[in-house]
Each structure stands twice: as C-alpha cells, then as structure tokens.
Image (cartoon, rainbow, N blue to C red; front, side, top):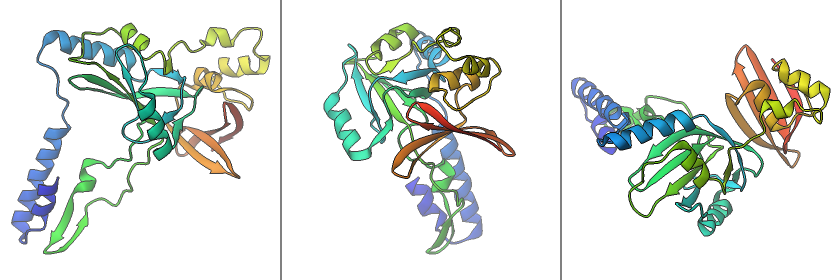
Length: 262
C-alpha cells in the first residue's frame, strides 16, 4: 500500500479522489482468495476448509504468540527450537489443555497454515493503511486501533508440494500439537460429572466450577477471548453475544471462576 499512501499526498482534490479509488480497487483485488487451477487441489482445499474451519481442538503444547507460531513437518515432528524461540520472544498464547479453534486456513505451495483463536499477529484492516490529505498533512481515514492478537498458528510443512490430503490426514499430522478427540457432551453427561454441571450443559448454561470442555459443550466457542493478568494471575474471559446481552465467563486455568451476564 506504499504506492497508494504516496498517491494520497498529491495535491488536487480530483487526483486525490482518483488515487483513492485506485487504492480501493487494489485492496479489493489483493483481498480476493486465490484458488488452485488444478481441480484435484481445488477439491482438497474445499474439503479441508469444510472439515476443519471452526473445528475446536485442545492444545497439547504451549502455543506462542507472534506471526510464526509452530511448524510441524509431514511426519508430525515439531520444530521445537523455533517454537521455543517464539515462546521466549512473544510469550504463550494458548496453554496446554486449552481449546484452540481453527479460525483461518491458508494454503501455500509447500505448507498449510492453520490460524488458531484469531492468530498471533496484530493486524490492521486494509483501509487502516490509507491516509487522506494535501501536501504533507495527511491522516488515516480510520481511527480504529489495530486488532490485538491472543492466538497462535500451526504450519504443516512438506518437503515439496503439498499432497492431496483428507481431514483425517491433517488431524493425524497435527496430532502431536492438537488433540481433536475432545470429550463429547455424551461423556460430560456421565455419572462422574456433578449433576449440577450436567444440568447446566443440558440447559446451555455456564456455572462456576465448569471446565473448558463443559463450557464448549454448553455454549459452543466464544465470540471473543480476552486474556489479562489480574493480581498477578493470568486469567481469560470468554465473551458471548453482543450488547446489550453479553455473557462473560472467566477462567483461572481450566476452571470457571466467575460468570457475569449483562
């Protein structure tokens, strides 16, 4: 967008408007998905998107913040050195035992990148890169702050071209970092689960004492996740709904410690 930014600074209202329209067109073109020309690859991409997008697994290892995330090779081996470097530099985004929802899938020539819980990189919308003005006096057209990142990512990397894969193939390859065999609601209704929690799950309610699996079974994935350090303890809020009806579920580790309905 550097060229668009420079163009916006040119004096003259007509030229500014034309440059603005050109910038918008470029942004729209670059934001369109690029599908493979090969029909077999196209079918594989569609199958993986349908089977894995919005799928929720449980993290087996600490997942780092940052744009690199974790790299896994075709045999399922984790690049531990790179993962440890990312954890040291950027901190932990997803702790072992925490839910990790696949929120985006990106296909590259030799790898597939799975964004988890919104990804680990702070990002701006395309229009936040555009500035308007005359001469040297310009200002962004949007005052929205960058989107904060609380998630991570896993890249499944192959030595050559990505082969044709099924959903089960991918789950198996990612098995060392993500557990896709979460407990089902049927298991959560077992006699070992306290009656009040079983009743809450059945009624799609959240109560103090639930774990993350129980909350996911009762309410599904949250609309937003917010992680903060309070009194020296890192806690996470799962937020459901939009104003005026918003539900806040606060976790300390894997246990619900507070439920607030607004």
